[in-house]
Length: 143
Image 1 (cartoon, rainbow, N blue to C red):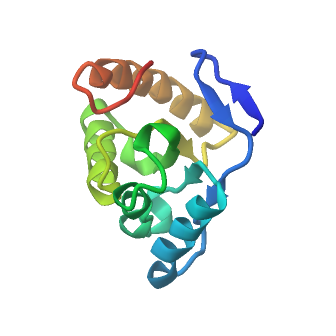
Image 2: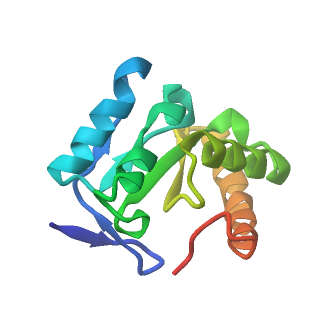
């Protein structure tokens, strides 16, 4: 498997399985079979509407894979991160929907490349500060 190294030194697989546009009723089985087939990076997002159905927990429970061998990413929609409280709430909701103790990578979904986007970049910097604090509450994994 090929990895890339993130800015924090964490390694992330270059190839993953995304759940965008997979119907909710098919998502759990699709992710389960992807994990059985060897995928270890699972990509989801709040806006996909199927975080609850992702199904990584089933593969973990069936001992196909250990949680620490998976790399789970999700994305927060830009409207969910206006302030630290909303960002923390959005992450907590994703953790609940995914039924996981931690998320490996949280991304900002569809940042804008204009003046509004520049403002969002500043907000994102604040969000990163929040995430750094949340890791001490064991909501965000940091190795």
